[in-house]
Image 1 (cartoon, rainbow, N blue to C red):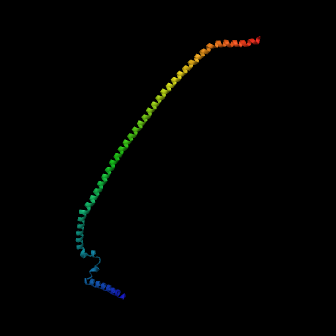
Image 2 (tube, helix red, strand yellow; image 1 turned 180 degrees about the vertical axis):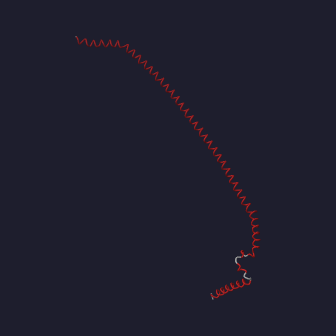
Image 3 (spheres, rainbow, N blue to C red; image 1 turned 120 degrees about the vertical axis):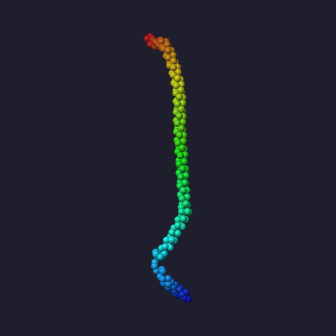
Length: 180
């Protein structure tokens, strides 16, 4: 029994094809002319529908699509311009900050250089003063020592004749008992 519905279906398919062929023949072979858009009998209605469709599409595109695209493009251009202006402003601020920083660094270097020079001058002045003081002290000590040496020399020179006399007597006394 499973084959019976398939057989009916096969018959129905053939019957539909036959009915379609008879239908086409009854219409005078209307479908045998080829692709309908290329049928010269319908060119006029096709051109009218083409014009109507074109005008509707033109109206829809010009009223809704083009303004929407223009708004998007204008918004994009405005965003880009604002971003460029913001970037230019930030670049100017960065340049100002860099210039301010360079001035501050230059001032700090100059201040540090001045401080080092001042400290160096102060240290050199202190060293110079201490050196002069030490030299003066040493000069005083040298003068005192020279005075002591001169005094000792004077005393020694004054005592030389007495020492020589005493020494001469001692030598003579020692030599004299040897003679005797």
